[in-house]
Each structure stands twice: as C-alpha cells, then as structure tokens.
Image (cartoon, rainbow, N blue to C red; front, side, top):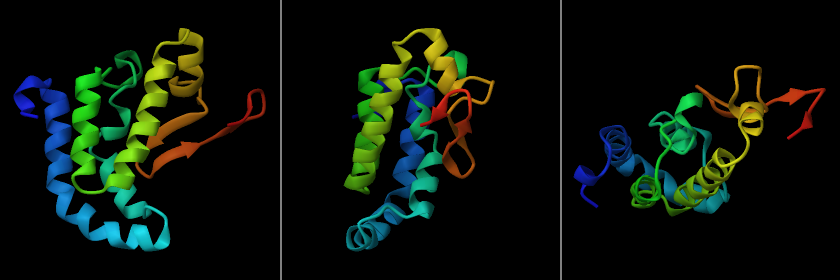
Length: 134
C-alpha cells in the first residue's frame, strides 16, 4: 500500500519497520527454532511505535483506523509473520479497549499507574493491590 494514503505519523512507523526488515528476516529463523520472538527483535519494533497505534490520542497513541493498523501489520509481516501476528493481537486488544468507558481506558493507559504501559523495554505488566494482577 502506498504510504501516501496513510497519515504521516503512521507512514513514518511503516518506514521505520521497513528499515528493520533485514533484521526481522534474519531473526525469524531463530524465532522459529526457539518458538519465541527475541526481546531484541520485539523491542526494535516497539521502538517504531507500532504497538501504540490504536491507543487513543488522549493517552498518547495515534488512534489508528483499520487501514492504518493493517498497513503497520503488513509492514511487520514482510519481515516476520509471527511478530505481525503478535502485533495484530495486541493492536486489536487496544482497539477494543479504546471503545470502552474512559475509566477502563485509564486503568490500562492512565497516569495513575495503569496495569499495562509501554516503556523503553517493551510492555511491562504491573501490579496494583487494589486491582489485582493482569
């Protein structure tokens, strides 16, 4: 898909993913053999912004539409199909959550130490005694 039909922010993420393609292809065999995507590979894609595209803008995401989410997943899939699948699962969960009440969104993405947040090392699943373990 030509990136000209995407918002510039999403097109930039796809371009970053495209630049990673040789690394994703090289890491793919190892991931298949170990049955696990390496932290290095996962984190390199996290750094592109690919895993926060469907988060609402009020929580720092891009509120991607379906075309944009598919463009990002296809970009990842050109390098690593397994990682594209993981992206699709995480992104669809973010999209579903974006349709929920703002209180539910704040529990996950909010500034009060939500259960799940994205940091430099990737997804960190936190614990809050008043909410239980995710």
